[in-house]
Image (tube, rainbow, N blue to C red):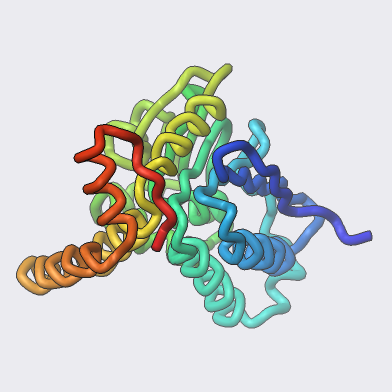
Length: 255
């Protein structure tokens, strides 16, 4: 039977916890394919409102680059990995990476595609591949630079050193830090709260932020203007306004 590299647990409130167990024996390509399949399944489930991405506490996304991986054309491996990351980034549901141990290499590349990262005090982050003559290959160098700046990204890639959660929070890599014994519970509570908001507005808002980040301000503001107008064509906007007037909780549908 094929090794389970990714598992999904469904929680109340439409939360899905996607755990990337990884493996020291599976190839990187096998892990990426397993992740791609899980993302495709979850993105197609209307009952899933939000995703938590997690890994084992001893390390996020365990999968060593093996000699067999070099059999694949490096460009093909990188191209496929980048496609998988884009599929996660654009899945249309709010997604939080929950880091409780070492988050490095491919694990960090996966975490960077999420909307944001929360971590325990015991978490650490980095790209140690330089010790093997490698750099990130699934878009990690570009996403990290857009998040924390070019110079800090170069420092992490060039040195291969890990930084702790406090430093990761200081530079903007991590949004929130929780105690080690309740990180997942806090992350689930946060995502549950987010999922009470309009799925339609969350999806559009995320697209606007992503699309506008790398273009000039005037064009980005035009994207925001058009997206704002699009919100007014939705059921969620009408329901939200009516709920405010009725002094009740809105019943959003994502339409």
